[in-house]
Image (cartoon, rainbow, N blue to C red; front, side):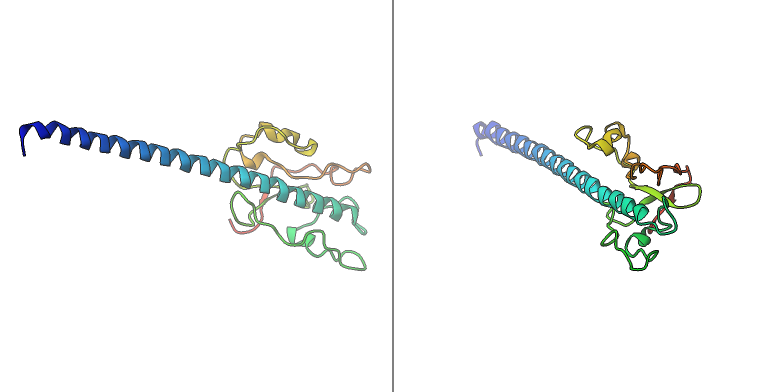
Length: 175
């Protein structure tokens, strides 16, 4: 090998290292972007599933036979409500929390132990800060997904809203 070929070999090695660094940096950027997109998708599912639970709780309270204005004791009560003459199904199945992938919702309960709402057990910070429905207007200020509270609005006759949730939230499902 002649002395004149050494600088070219050094330049080629340096160029290869620069290309590897650029490729690694762009791959990392793509991975971060994909992770953010997946989190946004899970946020959308959390809003959908949380809304399903909210509406199921509203239907359960309205259908109350002999127990007007009371939520269920357990989420399973939304699947088959046997309080009336015919069983009612307010929810098709217990949906998992999209942020955790498990049915580990945290129940908001009133002083009597009845469920008045749910929220995620995830402590991740939300990406979404605006574009929420009227029932979700406070979600934009949430620090974590635990702050996204899915609970029905109080009925005109005071149902469900009459018993404010206690600070004694209980975990639903496996921890």
